[in-house]
Image 1: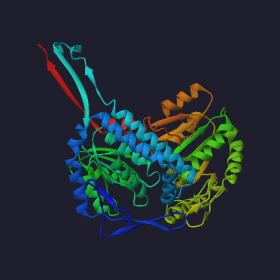
Image 2: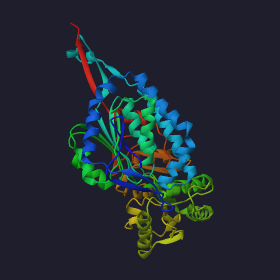
Image 3: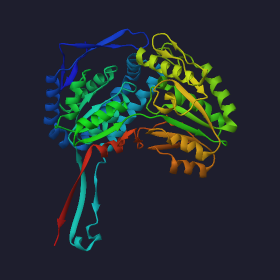
Length: 473
């Protein structure tokens, strides 16, 4: 049985929960079900360790983060196999996540060494003559990090890395479906010399305990990645603490008449079907200029038929299991609902095995359909024709979400029109919205959340500005 990590110790519990390999349902581990006493111990440890971590020199915090990154690098293939076992994503995608986690932690080490401040020109106003002012950034305190199932290693690195870099302590609550990578990461921080109590990992399913965690006044910051409903509940429970929410999307790409179609079709396949669509910025809507609709449709259907569906542990597998059979059934029910409402399935649309949904391309959809209106979080994408760019942008913006969208065009004027008018946290030109680098500002507007990740920007979210001024006369 696995153990939780609290105050530098590995802790058991009287109750456990199984962790299953999504592709077969095989139980691969048992993890503890935390009790209220474990939560209390973790919060006390996090509070008690704050002075230690905040006073640890920045070069030492950077050194710890680099050691953890190197620890992952040394056993990269073992990490990839673990991710495949707990998420069901193909092994090649798991290797990609491992590489990104190494980069995220390495970037966090760099940020630890350059957290500073700024001089304020006090004499810019008459009353400031004779004054010298500046500000520095200081840790917020205890950070609660709640992570999802779909990228359990890198998304945790995006929370723990910046938190430690900034001198905070952390209480982590990983997804109950994929907690193993979080526990393994804690062991690397322990080996790297992170002081006891700075990092605590609790595993539990109980909603009541999560509410206690986010509402506890000792927590200064909550960083959450997950669903909209859970995010809204966190805002209601958190009170007057800092909250960062990455709540997903309904990402779209616009394919203009002048687009390079040789680049578009492969990118759309990657963007729509990576990790069986279980990606916050998975491509769900393709708005294609009517003059290129047939060409893109034929290319997509042809390429989807070439995808290899099967066991995620095999090297040649492109598409595999969703995280649970219930999620697979939900996606199938959405597809069937769309068909009843007039949509056509061009390829896919079926469930095979325990929890695998075949990659699906739909057409003849309309905006009232759930697969167009809401976040599907599954391997499906809809083709929607349009006649002019203004119409396409308007349709993109009708979504309640606004995380990332994309546009394919060779016209700089059209690219900047999209940048100015698309309502989202990010707009990518000649790329699908599923693209992400771990150091740029990442986050959304509308129902996609609050705040920004990307290591430097997460550090800013996890620090306060403290101002000081000297009256020199």
